[in-house]
Image (cartoon, rainbow, N blue to C red):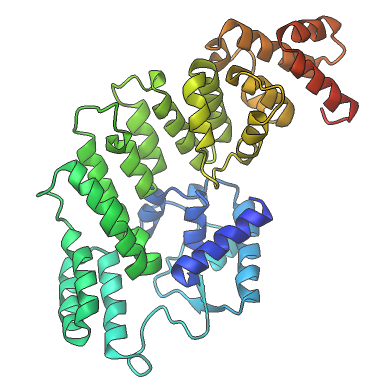
Length: 391
């Protein structure tokens, strides 16, 4: 993660939740699958360190820098009350995760002496809703109706939605969660919104899996709900494990590539996205144009707009070869004899293989001549970068 990306994520968490939660930082950075995090919270024999999708040293360094950033803004440490001891995880990593950081005036829990009765009731209600504790939430909501009737109405819709999907169709439930409950939870529950929403998304994903496949509306594909829940492995399995021929659907290839990137499997994600360029060039352009600003494949995110602005413009099928020059890592991720290359059209496949070979054997004159015949612009770019010592 670049310093700019880390600062942007940290500031976004502060803006959304008013505090810095290291666990939320790891989840939002896609370094933890939410299913693993929930299993760890439930006390299952899973090491949080083993569940990380990046090296522990990387997570520690990024957390330390993020904490320095929030401390510089005046936030102060607050000890978690629900932190689980994990003896199999690096002690320093767990120490970093064992605190929240909030402004001095902010408190995670209300205080009977310093806060109003309504504020205390809100805190208890938020905790109950996050845990889907219907009985406790009902009691707190009844108190809030006496203390702050207007607020109680907003919280009531979140309570009603717990276990209330049996009376709605899957598409109605999807619209309800996406357009009503998610915005309300973010506004009312703050950092607890993820914990409240995830079980709703999981239940919806399981319902969507029972429906006949709808190729025209990918919002109804189970992977959509699994992704919203942060269950990346389940999202991938809902694509690759179904009877649907996802390899013939550009939108599903693109979605699987996004899921792989979110699991920090950048090489697998890159291969799928290059496959899109070779097999479905017309569909690939808008799908790559729509890459999320925080997509973990930062090199692709940065280089794709450069390719689109290249003069003279190159065919989309030449982008994988062009990217060999822009990102050296792809030379290991996508070798010329791997299946995605074999799926390319003859000219695109030959172009990729020739340039890949030329990068390994720069003095091969025959390879230079072949690349010139295939795509002279790529040979010119290669020679220019080689003169600069950049390849």
